[in-house]
Length: 317
Image (cartoon, rainbow, N blue to C red; front, side):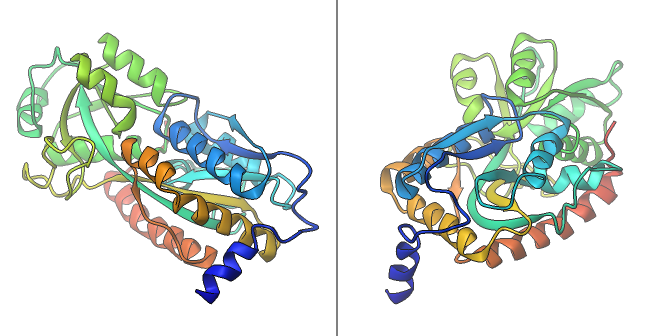
């Protein structure tokens, strides 16, 4: 109880570093319309109410998240600019691109973890497949190879696409976009065969029959798609991928500023209405007790994905 009161106190404590008279900026390193955009806008609304400051969302898509990450890395370390980071846009992108314009390990200050969305593997319904086994049989030896849309090189979708090809034993052609929305548009239109992403942007297309889900890439079924079996259930446990979300600030941000933002984030995530909105959009919530805990989580994720990237020989095109 004492710790909770202290954390809530940070929400109203004045800070010379975090200018409370001007809006904050939340950079989402993808175009509007994808899962990152949905999560980021929900968080911005919830945290704004608790900080007493407007949080303006800025979509800065490109290079699998690198452009948005770089914008935040070079921003003043006063807490006025923060980043919605993710497993692909922040961790994987730095592992597959040979040169990035910032220090992915030391160039940011952790704020807190939000949670993760299990990734769904989906295809245009003209493909005569309804599960991963049928996809394997259909795609093996196919010429030309199946096409696979991603939100950008180095994203979680890019890595999972490579793992699908490696695990199921067929070739795919990656086609990189500047976000999930344009990739999804081309898959629904039949110009691209496959896509994988957190489930939320897929839902209206699945309901309309213009997209077909094959599996959840993980051990647990998605709460918003309970009837969809997992890659583990279908016999492919190697396909295990979720998109996690968290907040980072530029390196050098003062601890009291970081603590204030962390408290606002966790306080927002305790709100039942906000939690319900995130869950409805496929996010399994998992908060970090402290910013340092989130920093250790990111370090572990970097180690895990480095192994996968090496195994799949994944590189940015």
